[in-house]
Length: 171
Image (cartoon, rainbow, N blue to C red; front, top):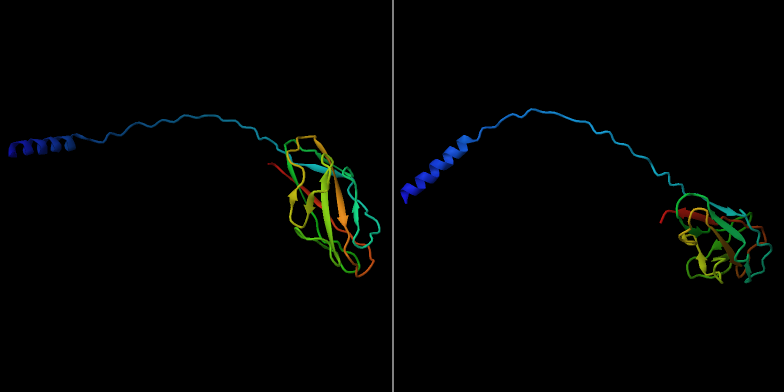
């Protein structure tokens, strides 16, 4: 047994001494690469740019019509669009935009949107963006409308105005 162990040990010593690092010569090459950016342009237009709901009576609903506005994807990519509103202000007391699942109240109005491809104002517009038209291809158009639900009472009869924002993103 001793003899076998000695042979193994001496073989290990020979192997470990037999490895000598060798320096290799270096060389390099060049690769020319090219690329082109895909100019993804996100762009939409909404016409007309404004709408006057006129004089509202407390607790009434006044729709614009489901095709009152035309949303056009003027970019070169498919987009999803969202809609959000804001409080309406003027020289008097502002009208607060109702939140999700809220209705009109004193000096609080509600706003809904609907697509011309549908039959109802079924998109609740709040200060938080909600889906409007999805999957609009480049050059696609989509009609939509707005419906305002007047406050249940008014502190004043001053003219109020506010913005509705339509935004587009690549899905």
